[in-house]
Length: 378
Image (tube, rainbow, N blue to C red):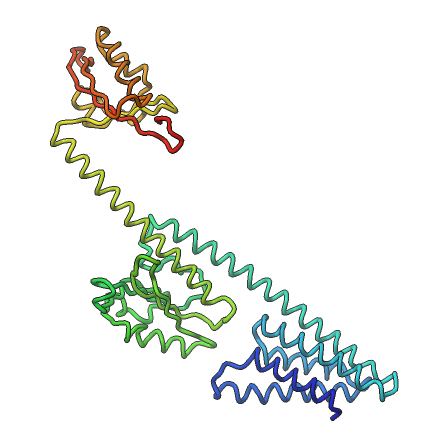
């Protein structure tokens, strides 16, 4: 072989190996032989020139499909082979008759068609991944219908099996508890609730499921943020070095956001419950005046103190003022005005309010003006 062609062949072989080899000799040794056979077949077609048939070219493209089944790999391998064929044809045709140069261009056209198909498959795979991500995000955000710990949001994804293990007493304990599983085929009914440790996670059944699947892989992703560590998530999917890890990390980010939102809602509920108990203990009712809408809200306790029926809709300020005794209306308005302009931090005023039976009851109203970021009280 001419020296220029030998260099081209080495470059092509390097490109193929970088795209296809995995680092495991059991898989890589046959792959190297397949790469070499493909290159030899390409050179044979180049030497045949115009005698190469459509069937010859079809056999080569079929072997390329088997060599690089993934669209992204097929695109890179085919692109490198196209460059090799074009450069090799330029070198060899210097010593050949022009009529023998027909085959390289037929071969190049077939390879370009194969590459275009790989581009289309990759675009379709990207679209499918985006649709999957959209559905998963929607399911994660709609956590009110299902606890995200149960991993129901994995329905419709490419994941075969999944397991979520959370720390029992924080990361320092070293103890994990599998509290959620995704097992659509019901193959591992005993996983949920099982105890584990970082050393023994993921469970052996998940590793076996990955080994049995075609190009299967079991990936463990830490479930945590910069300030919080919840546990570990194990997912059995398909090897895809271009997007798998990024996709799973995004899923974990969404899962952590759901956990944080859940904790925030629980904290708000606890705070509201404590405030309600404190209000009952002091026999106080709560009210709020929205200066932007002029709506006037009263808590259930506030309505009960005045003998009024709780109303889910907001009172307007005029409706509330109509309940105030006419002789006390000026004092009531002065107190509201002081709170609205933020003249004082807190405002206390006493006035009479008409109850449901028409009688008047003295109340002590306390007001606190809450300022917005811009400054005025809202």
